[in-house]
Length: 377
Image (cartoon, rainbow, N blue to C red; front, side):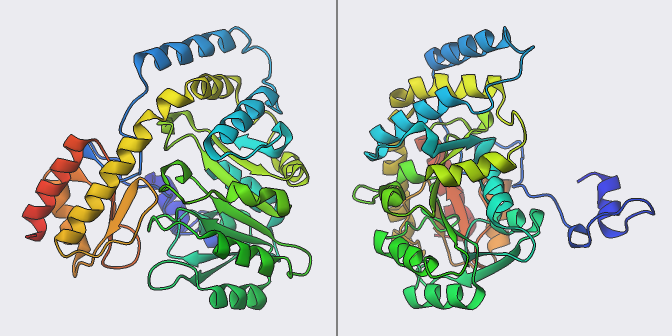
């Protein structure tokens, strides 16, 4: 935050009418620090290969020849490529008109709240969960309600129904796998939410955020399988994590065509640049190669879970590329101790917990060595 904005957030000058609910608010973002081992923002630690980089560069160069023209604002070719990928990844057949894309899944979520939230409407989720959800609600003047997850971070069916009946939300946001816990929702849990949402007067959109969906364990289905029977369901994905393209900023969503059409109304004109479309399509052409590291990251995750549990720490089951672990009386001291040893993880989630992203074997070895020193394991 700049000094001027910080001052404006706490004490706006005359003529600077900052919205009251934004005063004193810090911008969202995990620490970006220059340390040897970066395991705090759930990135894929493996960069694209030289061959992939060359093809992306070629696609961008070709797109650059037409940068004097606006991009395809409906990005039909990219939507078709994403549908092809999802068929291969999840076995679900989708038409291009069932796909939407934007500048990361963050913008996808913002579009959803712009279309279905707003003043006088409520968005509901269940904490602990992704810390950006209440910010999407705030930015769209949507009321925000966070129910509670069970002790094991799953959803309690009775709690879900009670919260939906109590707050009558127009949007329900569910992360699966959940961030920061890594918990995947069982199909029955999602079905229960959808059934309760069907009873909301005026309608309710259920969003299942599968940003980490490719990392789910064998036998864990995708919510994409439920789309055909639920026109109020939207399933969000991203190319930032499994594809290793966090810097490209491409997120996407699958839903019924009528729901997609509502998002087209609120999106800014030409919101997906020609360069972004070119990068995404070139990467999708190499999806098999880019996904090759997903299996090794899953395996490294499972080894890390076992290692932490063997040392007496509590670790919930995780279907993501990160692990939540605890409990610590002073988690900040543990976080700082790791940072002092060149390892950056995330201080997030309920009090007492920490989260580590899964890195390369060398990075995970550095994390374990540092944690043993700091925590005395």
